[in-house]
Image (cartoon, rainbow, N blue to C red; front, side, top):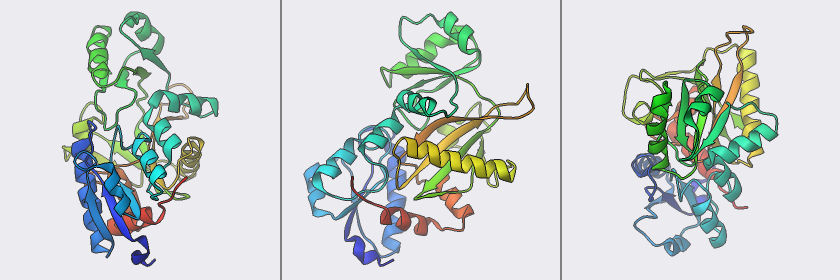
Length: 308
């Protein structure tokens, strides 16, 4: 493809969310890769510049994570300004950011999701634990990068876990722990890339395991039987499309421990419509497994930029 056809490109990163530092890392790498490929790319931090300055650009690569960048907000701005942008549109971005409403849609469409319940300050925590079982995860509904998440093994720890999640969001979810392994499927256009299995050395795949530690293991090939992997890649595409996802993204799922039937089952966990692009990030790993360099991946994502 002729990169000159992209015109002047804004790489949006930084922003005002709790994931600002991760976004700065992602965006600086994306910017460098685009420039290496000859793209007329420029840094644009919405926390430091007025949005009307985007009118000087012909295309936008969104490397923002979290609120205001991944939740449909910046997508709506770019739609109004008529600037094609990478990733999903307003509706799919908003749904992907909201773990509760994402689960509602997936469950209505027949996709399995972990059992969950909404929490508030008046919730009966003992009854909740009895219903979902322990361990469970407590998380803010509209945050990413595992911010505010706690793994709870004792009823007495639920109150503190709720308080931590509620610091980040008024909507808090408690979710049954599915402990047979965590996996992710990167989506690029109409293609589901090879599945990666995530094996944290810590208690779970938290912020440190994602971005700061070097002992998290990533398995690709993921170890699942080939027929099952192919099936799950297609189901991840389905899960992405149900939300209206487009361009690129990532769908995470969990496998149960298959203690009863001997056959493990996949549970869809969440979708990421503006995936990380750091040196620890999963989409570049999956692309590499598919024979694609980081620079090639970035240019392909940019080529998928659109409106509507």
